[in-house]
Amino acid sequence: MIIKTATFVKSSGKWQDCPEAIIPEYAFIGRSNVGKSSLINAMMNHKDLAKTSQTPGKTQLINHFLVNEQWYLTDLPGYGYAKVSKSIRKDFEKLITNYILNRRNLVNLFVLVDSRHKPQTIDMEFIQWCGESGVPFSIVFTKADKLKPNAAIKNVEDYKTELHKTWEDLPEIYVTSAEKKEGCEEILHFIEKTNDFLVQNNINFDE
Ligand code: GTP
Ligand code: MG
Image (cartoon, rainbow, N blue to C red; front, side, top):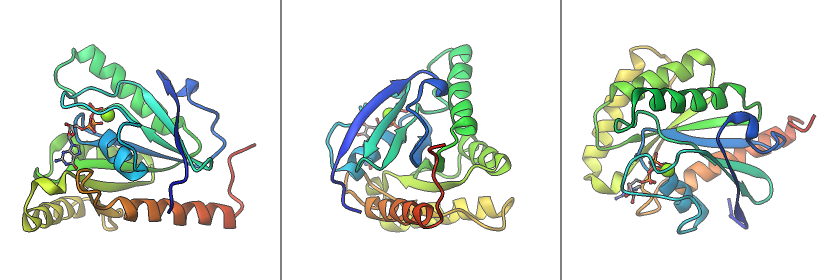
C-alpha cells in the first residue's frame, strides 16, 4: 500500500469520544514500551506522527490517525505498566477493553509482543482474552533488530507452541522492526487486502 496521507485526528480519553465509527479501523495494542507508536511511525513513513519515548507509559490516550483518507490507524495506551498505582492501571485496562469491545468499526487488532522475550504471562492472558471475546487479532513481534535472526525465529516458535496449547488455528503473525522498517509492508498489505474485501462485500460502517 502506498501511504499518500497520514494525519493525526484526535486523542480520546474514552471510547465514546473517539471519531465517528464510519470507516474501517485497525488498532495497535501491547505492553507499555513494546514499540506500538514507533511501528506506526515506521509504517506511515513519518518520524513523529505518534509520540514515542524510552520511558514506558508515553501513550495514555486513544490516538486516531487517518490514513489515505480511507481508514483509521489507532495507537492505544500500553497495558501492564508497572510504575503506576493499581487503580490507574485498572482505569487504563478499562479504557482499553471498553474501546476494543465497543468500537464497531474495529476490523483488526494488532497485538504487539517483544520478540526478545519468551512468552510473557501478561501477553498470553491478553491474547487469551481476545480469543475468548471473539476479537479479530494478529500478533506482531517487535524490535527484531535487537536479536540475531535465529533467536527471533526461536522465540516466535516458542510463542506458537504456547498458543497451540489452547488454540488449533493461530492468528497471522508478523515479525517487525521499526528501526529497520521490517514487516511494515506485510502489515500494510494485510490492511489493504482487508479494506478491498470490505468494499467488495459491501461492508461499511456508515449507518
Ligand atoms: P507506550 O506508549 O509507553 O505504551 O510505548 P510504545 O509501545 O508506544 O513504545 P514506543 O514506540 O514509544 O517505543 C519504546 C522504546 O522502544 C523507544 O525507545 C523506541 O525507540 C524503542 N523501539 C521501538 N521499536 C523499536 C525497534 O523496532 N527497534 C529498536 N531497536 N527499538 C525500538
Ligand atoms: Mg506509545
